[in-house]
Length: 117
Image (cartoon, rainbow, N blue to C red; front, side):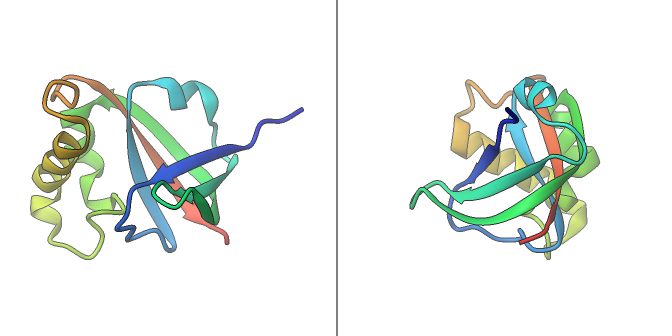
């Protein structure tokens, strides 16, 4: 039986139309997901699914490198000035996870998604 994965998003949820990426700390999603998989998108506060997307690509690297390479395409940064996206994204992740967890050299995963529903 195939597994169905759900990716949670913390409100306010933005930038999840069309194609975007989401960052997850650690490497677990590189083992769980592969290109072409479909995932449900869930509002973490309401615990309600709000859409579905297909995995376009996945990249795993230290957090600071991912922020530089993929920060401007992150759903929280779409529509904002691209040049400062890496710094803003790293600051946001530090606020969410805490500075003791979201360290620059911490392995993280950028999951590129294309919304299908």
